[in-house]
Structure formats: structure tokens, C-alpha cells
Amino acid sequence: MEGKIIDGKAVAQRIKERIKAGVDELSREKGITPGLTVILVGEDPASQIYVRNKEKACQEVGIRSRVMRMAAETSQEELLRVIEDLNQDKAVHGILVQLPLPKHIDEKQIINAIHPGKDVDGFHPVNVGKMMIGEPCLEPCTPKGILRLLDETGIDLAGKRAVVIGRSNIVGKPVSLMLLKRDATVTVCHSKTQNLKEITREADILVVAMGRPESIDGSYIKEGAVVIDVGTTRVDQRLKGDVVFEEAIKKASWITPVPGGVGPMTIAMLLENTLTAARNHG
Ligand code: NAP
Image 1 (tube, rainbow, N blue to C red):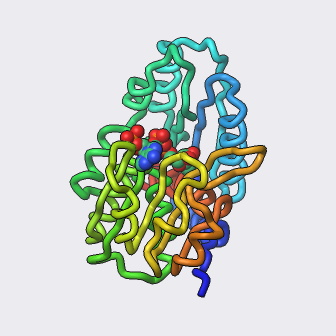
Image 2: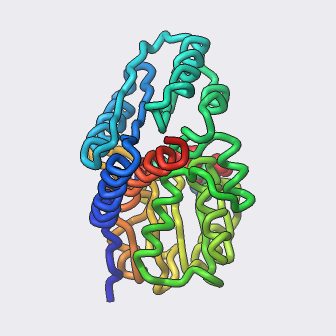
């Protein structure tokens, strides 16, 4: 029997409706309209699309959004000055610097300059550290969205064998921590992992975040596993996941599609973090 599809688009839509209600309430009761400023440096075409999508999503839920488009040759000092101004601006509750930045700018320094309370991407070391020790913080959007998708299945994660392929700071590592916090038994795999297939075939929950299109076929998947495909790679104008969907769905109990799985959740979580930041510091 084929697995069920976890419809990220539908889940994200429901979450956005709740966020809209939260935004309206904050505005009615405290006179605060959550505000997100997105900084885009340069003209990377993919980044331009991401930024436009974020702007559109903000409008849908009533978050005041502003995109600051800066020239590719903007200096690091100038960008740091802009961030400092936004840190001080009471109408700005969330600051997001669209990555990647041009080569001459040190991403780490830029992320570190954002006030942790306004770091709606959840990339600042203070938020990362708080997440590590289980304190409330702004959590990174993609892993947070993945956990919400897992919750949609109704499966209790406690005691389940979870395998994460990928150990990046934005997906693999944080999602592993979040699964651990939910009492899963977590294994993290990466490019140096030996016998990957042996490990993934034991996974009740398999999260794939490699950025290698269609490299996990049905033979990597345990019968009845939940498969979350984080990968998004543009191949011949189409978005491809890391998982061979047609094969995996025959083994999995639940699976996310690409597109329409993790992607919409990332944006929904960004909106949620902006609302949280406004509630905390409005
Ligand atoms: P990344 O920084 O390139 O990390 C990829 C990870 O996969 C690395 O840890 C790498 O191992 C591991 N890896 C690569 N090849 C492997 C192999 N053959 N076997 C096992 N592990 C392997 O990528 P990322 O930023 O985490 O993103 C991963 C994917 O998710 C990308 O396709 C990205 O576009 C997508 N993504 C989607 C969203 C969304 O909202 N839908 C958000 C973020 C990312 P090493 O550490 O050893 O190099």
C-alpha cells in the first residue's frame, strides 16, 4: 500500500490563518503590528524569488514587511550600520538577511550583529545555544517546520529511531537536536558516513537534507518509515527533492513531496517567529 502524503502547503495555510488571528489580536490589544525587514544584498535570482515569496506571505497575514535591496558592492561596514539601525528601530521586530551574501562579506559577523530577539531566522549563536540547552528561543525555520510536519502524522516520536542525512547548521544539526528533544533516538549522517543505506534502513523517521537530487531511492527506506525530503535542487527548470518520490512512497507510511512539503513550512515558521518576536519585544 502506498504511503500518505504530508501536504506541507495545506498545513502551512492552516498555520498562516492562526498567525493572522494572532497578528490581529496583538494589533487590537496592544496596538502593535509585527514588522519584518528583509535585507537583500546583490541580485542573486533565487534569492530575489525567496524574498518576494516572504514579502507576499507577510502581506497575507498582516505582518508589515519591508525589503531593503542593497547593491552587490555594499561594504560589510555599511551592512553592519544598517543592521544596527534596525536593531534600534522599535517598529522592526524581525530582521532577516537573505543568504548567501556576496563573497566580500563575512556572513558570521553579519548574523552575530542581529539582535537575538529579532533574529527570526534563528541563526544567531545566542538562539542556537538556547536551543541546544532547551531554553525558549527563536528556532530556525526549516527544522521547526519539519517537526510540525512530523506532528501532522500523529506519530509519537518518543523512542523512535530517527536518522538525519545532513549536518548543516541550518537544517541537519538543528533538526537532530529537535528530534532528540522529542525523545527520538537520533543518528546524524553526512558525506563521510559509511554504509549509509544500512543506517537509513533502520529509520522509523528519515529526514533527508543533502542537496543531492533523487539520491535516496526505495532501497534506503524501511517499510512504514516517515520520510521528510528537505532537498530542493533546480534540475531542468523543475524543483527536485533528494528522495526518489515514486519509489519511496511505496515503502513509506508518510512522505513529503517536493515541492509542497517542507518549503511552504519554512515561510510559515518565519511568520510565526516574527509574531513571537513582536509579542516578546513589541
Ligand atoms: P548543505 O549545507 O550543503 O549540507 C548538505 C549536507 O548533506 C552536508 O552535511 C553533507 O555532508 C551531506 N551530504 C552531502 N552528500 C552526502 C552524501 N552523499 N551522503 C551523506 N551525506 C551527504 O545543505 P543544507 O543547507 O543543509 O540544505 C540541504 C538541502 O535542503 C538543499 O537541497 C537545500 O536547498 C534544501 N533546503 C530546503 C529548504 C526549504 O525550505 N525547503 C530550506 C533549507 C535547505 P558533509 O557535512 O560531510 O559535507
